[in-house]
Length: 213
Image 1 (spheres, rainbow, N blue to C red):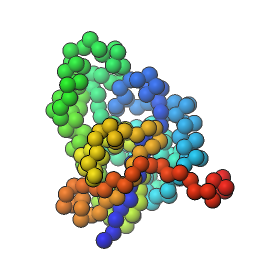
Image 2: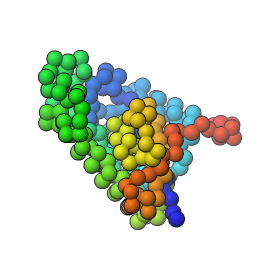
Image 3: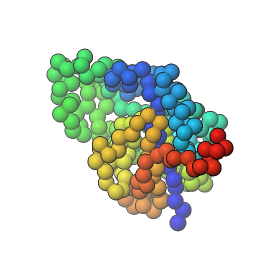
Image 4: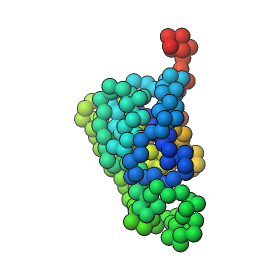
């Protein structure tokens, strides 16, 4: 039975990330440091070639995808965008500390969105729909490998909700330019809405690759 390999990759660093701001749909580019870091990761580690790259339409993701997979067959998918933080967008926890709405949001829950923002349940539903579109598209195109360049929160939701073995949210955190390798079979996805988590990504380069560089 045909399997599908996906590499879930978090975008590079932005100034807003450095400042600790909530950046969901705020369309910020990579910082100069973030660009350098992604180039350095591409030189130091092995990002296997893929047949297609699916990316969030936000600049920080499209820039990361272009650096790591320049010239690759790429499709933007709005469902891969980060959570909409509503009234908390582009603000820091310190700026929001005295806001009762912020305190309520920190209590968590699937149906406890920020004011004018998106609930966790909405994001999880989006993740499922995005994965379903990607897997269906790969089956239609006849592709078996793809990269998915998206956001840390989206990767965490995908892994904790649909990945096997089951991982705690903290075990699904990934740094900029890093992520997880997963394996999907059509039967497993259609039957259980689940995929197999193979491990962290990217991979150390083989010695012969390092010599060629």
